[in-house]
Structures are given as C-alpha cells and as structure tokens.
Length: 380
Image (cartoon, rainbow, N blue to C red; front, side):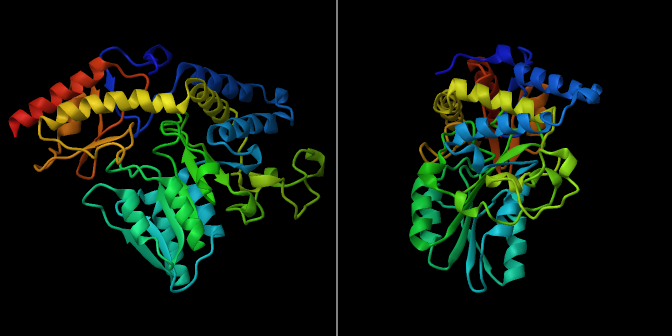
C-alpha cells in the first residue's frame, strides 16, 4: 500500500475526487516540469535544434520502461484515436473476415474499425456483454478463425471488467489474428508488459491513469511493424531531421524504429516534460502497488455499496482500480450534480456509477461517497 500522496496534488481537503478514469489531476512536479518547458517558448533564440529531440527521446525511454519495451518501439501521439487510426491503417483484414470489438467499447476504439470494416467488406464482430461479468471468457468464445484483428481494452470502460490479455494474446497468435489495444483506462494503474501479451499496437492517452497532461500519449508498435505507413508525413519523422540545414533534401527514409509514426510537432515543450515527469513518478511508486492501493479503496466502497443495493463485478473479473456500480433501479440523472454539491466527484457512464480512486484519495473520501450513496438508496 502506498501512503496517501495528496500532498503532491492541488486537491483541497474538502474535495473527494474519485474520478481518475475521467481525468486525473496533474501532480505539482509534473505541472512544474510543464511550466518550465512552456517558458522556453518565451526565448525562442535559446531553443537550439537539439532540444527538438532530447525531450521526445526522454519520454520515449520512460514510456518504454513502463511497458517493458524498447524505446525504439514507442511513438508519440496526441490521442488514443490517433494511435488506433495508425493501427487500422497498418493491420490487414479482408472481405469475409472479422474485426472483434467489445459491446460498449469506447468510441475512439470503435469508429476507426467500423470504417475499416465498411471499406474492406469485413464484418464488425461485437462481443456481447457477459451475464457473468467474465469478459475474458466472452472474448475467447468469439475469437474464432474468421477474426483477423482483435481490438480490445485492458479494462472495459463502463463495467470495469478486466480482460486477461495474456490468454487473449496467446489465443490471437494461435489463430494468426493481430491484436490492437487501447490501454487508456488501465496503463499506470494496472501492470502491463508487452513481452507477456505481444500486441501489434497498444496506445494510451496520458491524461487519465498516467497522471499526465491532455493531448499527448504513447503508442507501442511491435518491431515487425516498424516499416509500416504512418498516419501523417512530417519533417521530424524523417532520417535527416536532426540536420536542419538538410531538410530541403527530401528523403524517402524515416528515422529508425517506431519514430516514423510520431505525430507532427511531437517536441511539445510543455506537454512532453510534464508527461515524462508523471510517468517517472509512477515508476517510482510501482504500478503493482498503485493497483493494490486503489484496489483497497474500491473494495471498501464496493462492500458498502452492496449493502445499499448496488453491485459491481467481483475481482479478478473487475480491475482493482475501476469500480462500476449498478443497481436494479435506474441511476438518477441528477446524481453527478447532487454529488458535486457535496464536493464528491464520480462519473455516470451508461447505467453505471463509475468510481475510480487513486493514490491521492483518502479513506474519508471513500466514506463521503458511501454516505451520499446511502442517501440515494434511502430516497429510492
């Protein structure tokens, strides 16, 4: 268990922010790193050409350490949808084959595959919501020989259901299916290692569980796909980019590894230092300990909520850091506003109250939410 880290965040004592799956607060050290980077733009004459590369390489190395890959496997992207679109552009699928997605999958990991299916004549195969909450078993049941691409999260965002990606990755390899992952709702709070799962692509936006800023993320690209086609063409992804005087000497050659998939203006002097600093802190805390810490709070809330008529998938079918509470009666539409008046913050997603604590939360935060849920139950 990690001691409460609230002192590293600007969260007032009377605010119970249990909504990391919506957007994490930015740590003070990450904010300071971002401000320091942003102030460089005030003196552009001091921005020498090497500074366009040092920050991005620092971020690449830190991100690689988090997922157990080489820095050469990391591309810098602005969003999960950018990474998903890159995967969709590079993973093959034919007519009469299928692309596997989950029911209620996040839109950014759905629309690109819907478009690809329409373009190629493939079918979009949707894994139905499992009545027993076992998303892994449901995926393995539908992962048949017709599936060319499996497109999945590590955590299903409206249920908190956790997928066993090690088993699913092995099943994909046995079938010859490719695997593209959206890790935005898990990376940083749930241990993940590319060597164990062997995805073809895996993307995560930084603004949730990676505790970073908005509009920057990481994309893992498996080594066998490093020669793929990037989503855009820009100067900094090319082999001669480090020599500014030679940029007019157009080249067909890209920088090595996954760098060809980098977004334009990847050298963002404010966002990258903040994201890098945040991930370094996660590495110091250790993701398995973050998961255990958030899981203890989620379990406390789940147990109390069950006595009030709310239910959630049990662990290990549910990710420790992710609690989606449901009940037989509808969730009141005014619930988020009612909680916000009490300075208790969660999300309503689909038919679930989504509760997602992190290392800055306290037992008192959890108990304040439970007290609010008790008032909701009493009114029903």
